[in-house]
Length: 90
Image 1 (cartoon, rainbow, N blue to C red):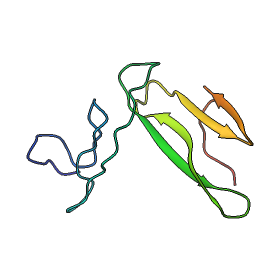
Image 2 (cartoon, rainbow, N blue to C red):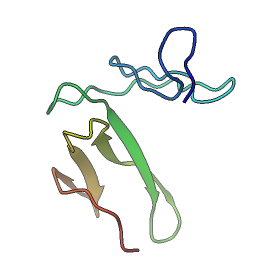
Image 3 (tube, rainbow, N blue to C red):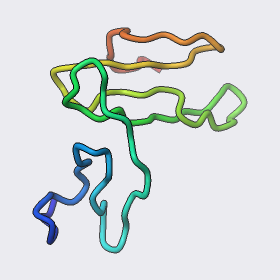
Image 4 (spheres, one colour):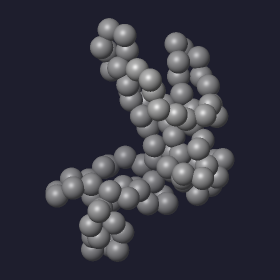
């Protein structure tokens, strides 16, 4: 990561959820919610692909605070949260 003019490092998400530039000339224009569990992290969206290859936008949201681990996800139309995170065996 490189430091930009505002003093934050490139690719970091600010406390308000605004993203700093993520590369040369690139910036994320989305604001992400603050984690309500730890009040320190930002909830970041994750997307996936369905069985037929159709994109599933924002299938899950995870807190970027490593000490928190909060997550919320949609599986087969059911909402679940707080499940332990781990590496997929697929």
